Image 1 (tube, rainbow, N blue to C red):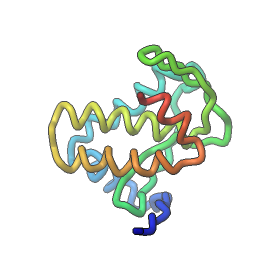
Image 2 (image 1 turned 60 degrees about the vertical axis):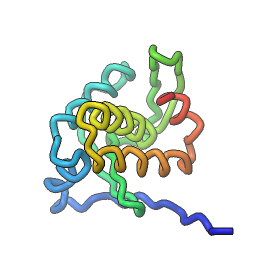
Image 3 (image 1 turned 30 degrees about the vertical axis):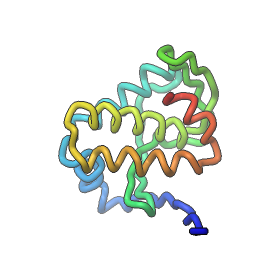
Image 4 (image 1 turned 30 degrees about the horizontal axis):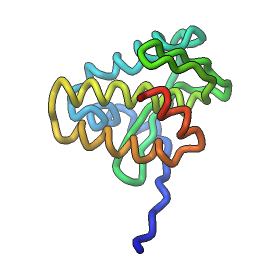
Length: 135
């Protein structure tokens, strides 16, 4: 039986941040705005701010708003309502943007990025909430 490797998220260093978004969206960085707007649309508490960028040990990437507070998310399309960490909210918003980008561009890099982040989300401490919010 093959052993599953633990996926690890590592914050992106300040001097590497400019390279992050082009990598996350395979050069289609217009989708960065979708991350911010989507979180704003599902979280009344979110009103902008700085974000952390993360690279995953499986090659995936995501971005999450900075903060330690819990955010209430309401996703009307699937009737999800719950409180999640800023990290989980960022994963949800990043998965949404990657899904839209994958559908619109059909680029293999973006499709693979979505699957890598989803694999990480499945092992996240808040995986049940994340999956409920994106399904």
